[in-house]
Length: 82
Image (cartoon, helix red, strand yellow):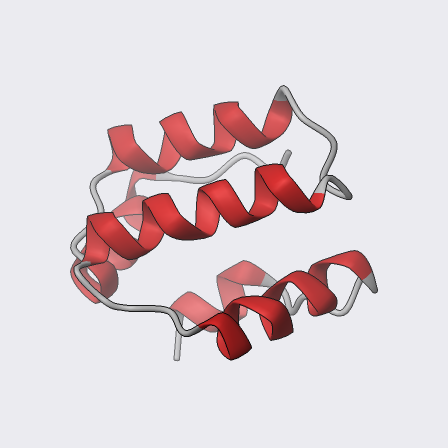
């Protein structure tokens, strides 16, 4: 896993209202599972949805899972800088 700075976490928190501890907790959960495990990915998506207070439709969740399983995930740091 890439080493992220406090500045990175602050940018994510400002955009998502998810604090560093929650991010690290979710990353820990994924680290302990297989990133190709659809059930684990769905669980993390639901946790992020709850943490941000934003609903994720079944269709959007399926698209996210598909992108991850097909290794079509963009660079996270580029997304945060937008």
